Length: 191
Image (cartoon, rainbow, N blue to C red; front, side, top):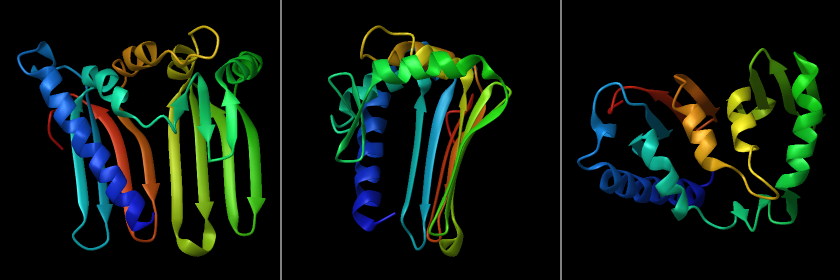
C-alpha cells in the first residue's frame, strides 16, 4: 500500500468515525449487544488507523464514499473497467447454487488469486509470493444475496448491512510486507 493510499484510507476512516459518532449519539446502537464494525490499519513505523463504528452507522457513512467505487449503479474495478451490477447479479444467480467449488485460480508472475465457495462463505485470497503480501476476504453468501437483492443496477447496501448485523468475526484481513489491515464485527465498541 503506498503512502498516499494509506493517508487516503486514514482520512476516510476519520470521516467515517465522525459521521458514525454523530449518527449514534443518544441511540440504542451504543448499548451493549449491538454489532460494531472495526477497522485497524497497522503500518510499519508509527502509522496506525483504528475505526470503531456501530454497524447501523455504516449506511450513513457510505454517503461519503467516493463515486469512483460505485457510480450510477456501476461497480468500478480499476480506472478503466466498469461492471454493471445487473451483470454481477445474473452471474451470481447462476453460481449461487453450485455449492462448494473453486470458481477461479489465477497464477501470474508470482501472484496467486483464488476465488472459491466453502459452505456459506465466498473466499477470495490473493498472494504475492515474493513480497510476503497476502489478502484474504471472506464474504458470507447471505451478504452477497442481500447486496444483490436490489433491482437493476443498484446494490442493496441496506439489506447487506442488515445481514452483516447478524454475523460476528473477521471479515477482511490484508497482510503486506509493511502493512496489516483487519476488519471484523463484534459487540464491543472498542478494539
